[in-house]
Image (cartoon, rainbow, N blue to C red; front, top):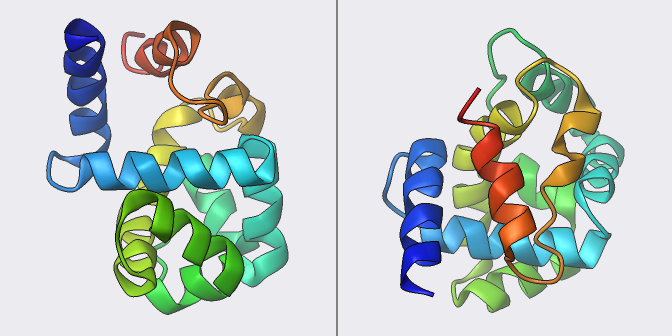
Length: 141
């Protein structure tokens, strides 16, 4: 598993800039699992009032920033709490990490501005080689 962890660390480091990448990946894994994939996460963010921000993350322009509070409100207390628990952090730290990193993650997973491009990135059942290959392919174009 050492090589897999190393490659994942490099890819996550590119996405997240290094610090807190393991926590953010755990948060994202939990959210994707609970929501049934990236499409479910996108729907949750849209329904939670972040439709314009999400569109900017998917699109090719600048990423609209969101506050930790807006992220927490969009995800809802129960979902956020479960994801935070999975990562071993509190809800406030979880919403802050997601607000900071999720725009860049989604932007990186949708390089051509098409939401369906993120469909191959599915950590809902844990990370496997297919997921790693999908994630790595986003950076090796």
